Length: 382
Length: 175
Picture (cartoon, chains in turn purple, orange):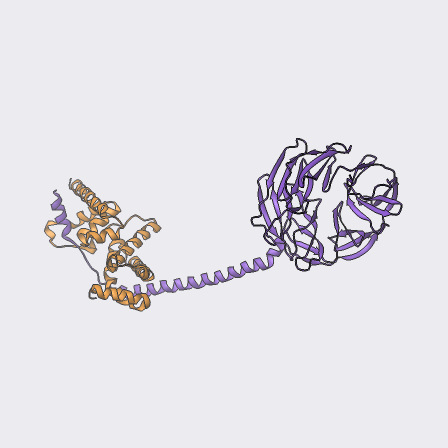
């Protein structure tokens, strides 16, 4: 068969057109039904969107505070005083005057790490308990303002913050890494410099860093260099002291942005909510087997769970001040006779009175206890 | 229903975009040809009603997007063709046999209608549609390419292949 022949045959077939009149109305109704169905679907979709929108709003309004916590202020009630058992302890006193503040003592290597000044610049130094030679470890930098920074130890690392530099030091190998912190995304008060005021290393390679001239804190990971800036709620500035003994919450002291009133509070590290203790205007805060604060020239223990605080009934002079130790809080009292030192140990609720105080010692910056010796860190008056 | 002039059709489409009731005129004009086009491919008046309804529903829904690149009737045939394809695919059916009741022969003594329709039936989907639309439904090359969403060169190649295969099938059947 030729192509033309096939085409001719094909062309002779023609379609029959059946009369569609009986079907036309039914088709018209079916089209109308399709529009009605689409309209119904649109109404249902609109209602579902509305309901889901309401649910999302409810989720944020009701559930989020439970997930992320509620920030607020509470007034702690004063409860019964704690009366410690008094014991007398004899200790040999040794003076160390080559260490500057801030400092930190590493019990394991028996090394004192501190931030020291050299030619108007600041660097990390270390020394031992003999009070001998001090060694400068890191390069000296400008601390930008009068703020000296902070130094802390956690596990094998010494963390120091000077200016906007973070030093991470391996305490055994003395290997140093220096990180300049960015101020990008930091909730700042005004443009300028933002030196590190205080820092707090947490387990899991995280450091809480509080910087001057800012409203927030930074959660910094020195391994991944990842930082997460967090603006503190309740109109408060970045803390100037922050302490913890666990990874759940940290206590801090700061002040209100508007009034400048000093206030202490607690930051929940998990949900980042803040609770301010609005009737405790503390000057110092410690975390030694519990939260302790110094205000109105006395030492108090804060029981956050029960929203109460207890005064530790210790007789001190008017100018007493408190220093955090490894297992207790040292109370330095000035009297006409000289300085007297005692230590409150929360674990046993004991007040240890130390004998033999050097009359020539006027000011104590810090205390290190080793075996039967008390090392008093005093300012170098030379 | 009378065939609409190009200008009149254009005017109705513009009006239908604002007032869907104006679409009635387009429905009245093309319902018959679309219904028959569908019926020849599905062999069932109920299914043909549904597919015709879907075709006009979709055409009205998307009338704002119609861009006059082809005539409105070609646009409707394209939607109808897609709906037929979708119907077969959703039901997982093979195309139904061609029903000779929907076809006629101009000069009966020279054409074996049934044999030729059976031969067309054996062609693949695209080739079958090209033969059907071109030789039987007398649609133009541009229209067929638009309906099947293929280029003109693809259309030309498919047509050559379809004729070759059809000739072979007819000759094999004769043997």
